[in-house]
Image 1 (cartoon, rainbow, N blue to C red):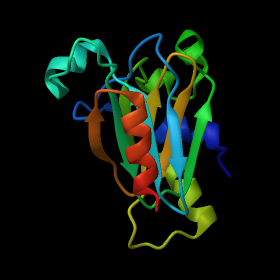
Image 2: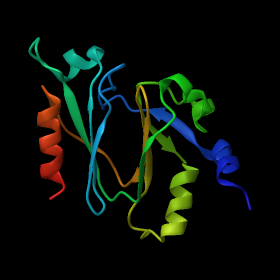
Image 3: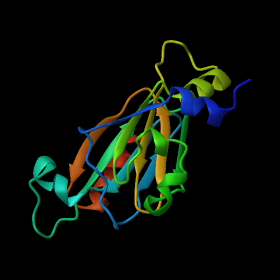
Length: 163
């Protein structure tokens, strides 16, 4: 049987998602709110995305909230930007401060097989890279539920979505 890390290199294809704000460099760490099978990730957005997702006031500290429905796996932890090269997907195009989808994900396939996920729910693998951590999840989809002028607002909205 092929190991997880071996199969990753053979199948996984990393694609950048441009319709999701990029994480800010050297900013506050992301915040996760989760319920049974919903994960909402809130994080500060890159200044380069202010015009695209704004407008914002000069005093704003823009955050976005991204919903991942039907989540069967999620994690937030190392590696961060400084050691991203040790991530198994680094050679497949994983880049710092970016939002990715892994097409033909061996992780999604393995989790679906182990978790006996219903065949009617498509499982997609998402990776978002931050300064000090990497967020990964396997879910049916993603939705940017909002871009807000402050982290407190994004976090409040995230909590309201898990009820």
